[in-house]
Each structure stands twice: as structure tokens, then as C-alpha cells.
Length: 247
Image 1 (cartoon, rainbow, N blue to C red):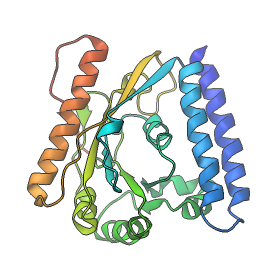
Image 2: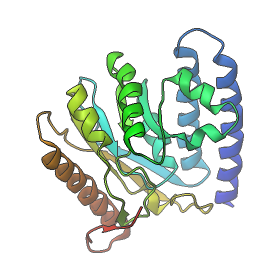
Image 3: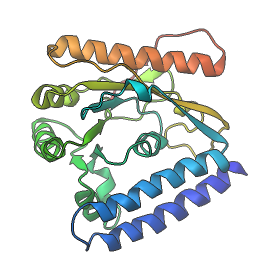
Image 4: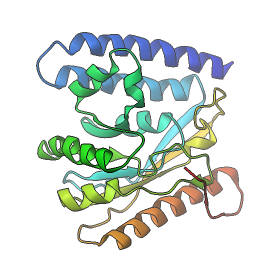
């Protein structure tokens, strides 16, 4: 029953706020659409807790620098985006072009200032990432990116892609790794939701100035190690290393 109630709320909220955001795209500036999306993500976090029984615990907010940063987050669930976006008043996010298959979504994403890139990657995707994230950097907004570029089941990870490194170097910003165990309760794209306390943890920022190899190794180690720690805490099982899966 909780899964059904949450699914009903998910589609109801998504439809209502998408239509509202579409209407607001005719207004000048990003703020009207941003106002809608902020409320949408917060309603979804509310629905997670009160309909699906998934309470969100946020750790490490005090570790986030006062300057604009890049959040590099673990991606286990569609709920990850709602949880992170709901924590901030203005956040640019990197997303694949798969969202543009939904009617009018492209218009909303452009108005919102989202950074849309080709899911297939490659040189063109890297160029698009650089070009579209430059505007967010110029505006002084935090940027959210999922370095794996995939949803990963709890205990697994995909190869970390270098797009986050290029933003780190080009924008000379610290990167805040973000770990989560939300996939234990809302896994990937599955219908069933399990009650419990999901943790979203912001870790110490990686300072600027590292070379690519050092940065990518440190980022992956921090995210995967802390994610596995959160999973171990929630399940009461011994800590296990995460396992890579093919793209």
C-alpha cells in the first residue's frame, strides 16, 4: 500500500508541477520556474517520508564551503535528485538528454538552466558539458553532477567519468563528494519502496589543484567508501567494498 500511495503522489506531483513550470516558462528569467521546481522536489521528499516511510537524514551540511562548489554524488535512485535539490535554493544540475523525451521537458530544462548532455558521452558530450556548465559557473550557482553517469544498485558502481574533473579544473572550484544509501529503500527504477531512514551525506570538499589521476582516485574512494559505510550502518552487516559493473 505505501508503494502504491507514493507512486500515485509521484505521478500527480510530477504532472502538476511540470504543467505549472511549463506555464511559468513564459515569464522572464529563471526564478519563476525555479520556484516551481523547488516546491516540487520538497513535496517529493515529503511524500517519501509520509507515504513511503522513507525518512531523509542529511549529514555534513556544515562541511559545504560558502563559495560555489561542484557536488559529485552517488546515484542509486531517482530519488537522489529530489533529495539533493531540495536542500538548496538554487542548484544547476547535469542530466542526460533522456529527460527531453518527455513532452515540453526540454523547454523547462532550458529555462531552469539545467546542463543537458548526450547520454552516449564522447567528445561532443564533453564539449556540451563545458559550454552549458559555463553559464552556471558565471552565475555563481552550485553545480550537481553524477560522475558515474548511471544509476547503480547498492554495493555497486560504474566507471567514474571525467566530466567532473574537467569542471573541477576549468572552474577552479572545490568538489564536495556526496554519499547516500537511498538505494536500499528506493532502488534504481523499482516500483516497490521500503521504509527506513535514508542518509544523504556531504563530505569534506576536495580542494582545487589536484591532477586528474589524483582527483579521480580520491573522489571515487571517498564516495564509494562512505556509501558502503552508510549501507553497512543501515543493514547491520559488515562493511564490504563496492563492486564495479560494466556500463
